[in-house]
Length: 197
Image (cartoon, rainbow, N blue to C red; front, side, top):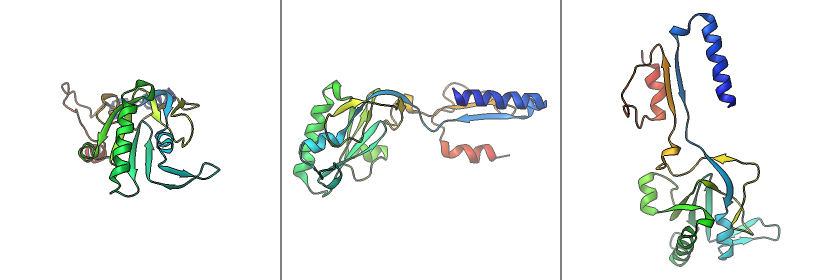
């Protein structure tokens, strides 16, 4: 809402100069966003399996399997990539959790899936969270807690339609195009394309 208000002020200022027809407006986002109310803590789950070694203050001292979190997703990595026992047990446990909607795991991805999507190098398993959930950083206690303070996030699977970036064009240099014509436009192409005379 704040950004919308600021864009309105900019457009009004340009209009007041009388140069409105000389401007092209290009508005892009870098990703979508989802509302959240709960956090799933994958490291709390791993700790309950005995894969984390925490000191008396709850600080991590060592680990066998660790979860990296990124907003709406998490990825499991083994300290020793050849630790097939721990990898198999953690995979089976997270598959079990994913089958219960209380934990909010929408989908799990294996190594091959991650290689195809280009995400979480070195991970053997990753998960994307369902709407309403994000991956939290808790290492002890409940696997799921309320999200205090944070009301929305990103970092979910790039396969989700609501994670796609927005692209709005209007003004002097904008050209009308058919539905889907700019589908899949890449953010990295924006600046060089717009700088072209």
